[in-house]
Amino acid sequence: MNTPARRSSCPTHSEQAEAFAVSDRPATVAEEFDQRQGVHLVRLRLLGTCLRMLDAEIAAGNPTPAIRTQHALLTRHFDRWVAEVKAETADMRLEIRKPIAVQLAAILLAAQTARNAG
Image (cartoon, helix red, strand yellow):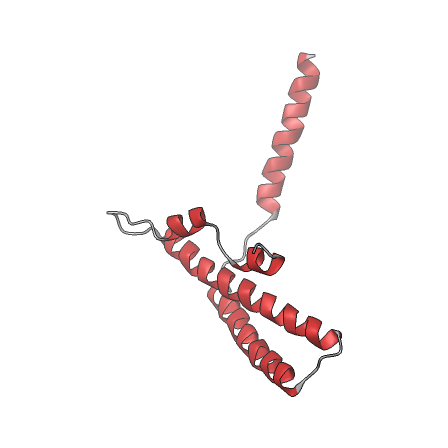
């Protein structure tokens, strides 16, 4: 069955094949980082989906003790995993102004060139 919850939490076969591809060379820093981020992505996506389902049960009027207990437990895991992601990427602030300025300059130059050529 291809439900929204399943689609949001299960990687495609090609993504799984890429994740387990074997190479003769050591992984680059970027590849290692990408693999760690993939773990974070899957964990948070799957747990987020579970939390949304429990939220829906509670909102639908089914706040049983078991559902509330599991919601609290999963929320603690989710918060811990979010904190791990934030800690791992805390020093990775991207300066957005420079790439945007370069893109804008390229667009303006292309527009000026096109205007002058036509």
